[in-house]
Length: 108
Image (cartoon, rainbow, N blue to C red; front, side, top):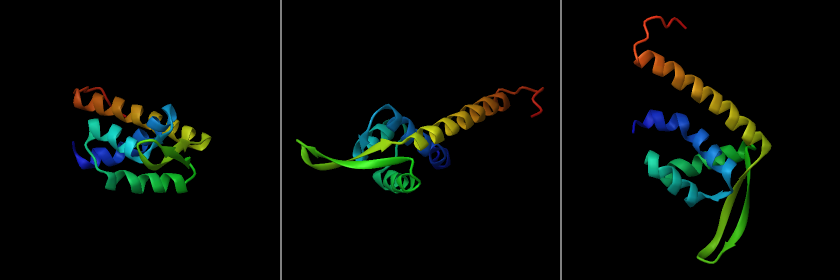
């Protein structure tokens, strides 16, 4: 998948996953890499930035499978931002589809 496409939707993907349930970093990387094909080096800086922007918080939880894990929990500000991004995404997809499907009457 084109790297520019990926970069444009990673925030939306992270926030969407976290709006469903709290996740630890590697879990997010694993879920996102299934369909998008990305690395930890792409996701962790994004997680750090989004946390600093107060879209989610973190907490540590012990794991029976190894060391304690840092979990990410979305905050109300993160839900609001995710909803804004979703609106922009659907609007973009709608307009791109109009263009690539060849609608000659499209003038917006």
